[in-house]
Length: 132
Picture: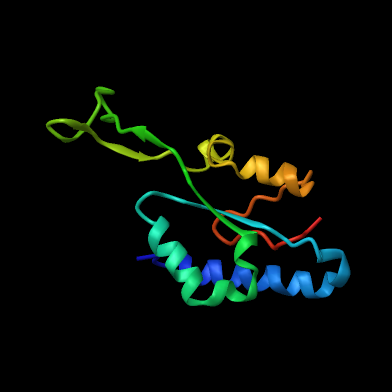
């Protein structure tokens, strides 16, 4: 289940496609999109993109990577919360773990290989693609 994030991702993909069309030959090398997911949403997110033919983007230009996780702590005592008797409860580390997740996934190496020097972060659909 992707929830309300699905339409936002579709809109973003359409914006990337439109920007590439406007850029013409200058965009021949592709405009990669690095999509951070969680372990809980990764499969559904990939299936969503596949079922929509990546919204016209080249599948090789869409890179999915998982955000990291941190242990959950109780708010008052700061004790680790347990998911079960043998497993510590965890939660995604969110935007704070972005660069560590990019590094761990190999996405930063992919950016270097592509010659990407400038990165724009898009969070929750509040930023237009390729804005100065």
